[in-house]
Amino acid sequence: SAVISQKPSRDICQRGTSLTIQCQVDSQVTMMFWYRQQPGQSLTLIATANQGSEATYESGFVIDKFPISRPNLTFSTLTVSNMSPEDSSIYLCSVEVPKAIYGYTFGSGTRLTVV
Amino acid sequence: DAKTTQPNSMESNEEEPVHLPCNHSTISGTDYIHWYRQLPSQGPEYVIHGLTSNVNNRMASLAIAEDRKSSTLILHRATLRDAAVYYCTFAGGTSYGKLTFGQGTILTVHP
Image: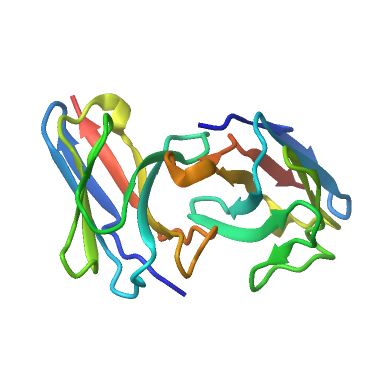
């Protein structure tokens, strides 16, 4: 299965600032996914990022708040913009392993605290 | 959107089998049923997936109801390392690329 490196693993940020989270995969993948996991909650899909096209956002998430880049088939970034304490969550990236033999692989997540 | 329903929590003793149920009455005919588990401070880990037939791998077995409206994840001999939150989700078909997570089941394993 694919191996995902996600950075940073955690951060504490001031409200009003932005944080960019990086996701690096050790193999080429078509689709990359970004999820949010609020404290004590399940995962919610933020957006799907395909290389060479605009990301597709789920209901309740907008590009101005969560801009995503996908410059190549192994890398993506998610920016959390103009942060507020409500953005304190774990953010995870995920990829689909080719042929779905092993399903989807997740990074270890970025634990964000906004103060 | 497709939706799954799971018990909030379950308990088991070490080395006993565990059956984790999931209801997914709105699943489409082409959606695969996936199971993931999440240990504290880690991302979800793939466990198993299937479409219609029961599936086995080194981690678990997946029993899928004939009408596909429910499934059961079976851990044949629970260990302390199996204590985690278990999520039943869909992927593929009409929800290609999109995993919709329910609230999951917190599994506690007692020594």
